[in-house]
Amino acid sequence: MALRIAIAGAGGRMGRMLIEAVLADPQGRLAAALDVAGSPAVGQDAGAPLGRATGVTVLADADAALADGVDVLVDFTRPEGTMAHLALARRHGVGLVIGTTGFTPAQKAAIGAAAQDIGIVLAPNMSVGVNVMITLVEAAARALDDRYDAEVYEVHHRHKVDAPSGTALALGEAVARGRGVDFAANAVLSRQGHTGERRRGSIGFGTLRGGDIVGEHVVMFAGTGERIEIAHRSGSRANYAEGSLRAAHFLGRHGPGLYGMADVLGL
Image 1 (cartoon, rainbow, N blue to C red):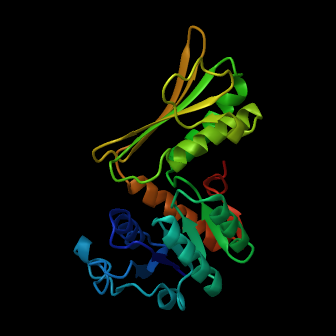
Image 2 (cartoon, rainbow, N blue to C red; image 1 turned 45 degrees about the vertical axis):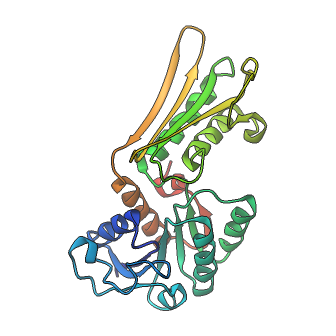
Image 3 (cartoon, rainbow, N blue to C red; image 1 turned 60 degrees about the horizontal axis):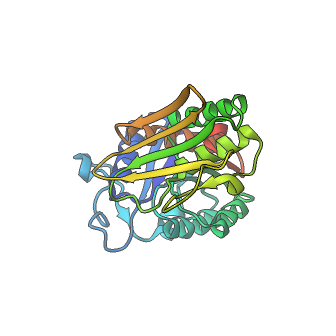
């Protein structure tokens, strides 16, 4: 039986790519599509922007959309929207793939609590390549001690609302895990003015925004006489959609719990 998948934010660019990916998936079926009230997509066929008739109408009533016939909801919206969908998914027993970033600690705790009842894949980046990169960064940090200065920098389009990106933070956390240190105690998320010398062992961050750049992430380990860089550059959001579908199918095979892309990919 095909996995019945719902897409949140169906009228947005990422929503459209997710819908296209589901329609191309022989083991998945588009069961519902959601967007906020007032979106031009609401009331339209979910495949209209793709020039395809799906028979699935984009709805603003998420409760009604999830009430029947949905196995997994894929959500790439904003924290407030995701938290509303989280409560509904929990009520209806629907698995949830969360690609949204920018959650507060309290919101992350609520997601963890909901995972007692439903399966949730939470990842700051659904790209397969990015998650392989996170694994590589942790291994590099384990091999290179704090004599190598760790810097994480990322570049995104002008419309991104959070900084540093969730993926950049995940990469910094990977550095901290590899070194066996506390991330919060060592992260330097911004620099301004007379900062003094770089503190040994700190994990620095840099953020750039502009144009329509999908996403670039680089982790640099700078030592004396050498520099190691691990990088990932996205030219399309299609890789996020592919990873999201893999996460959705993972939830179709697993019970309640909070999972990451490392679980999905077996890393």
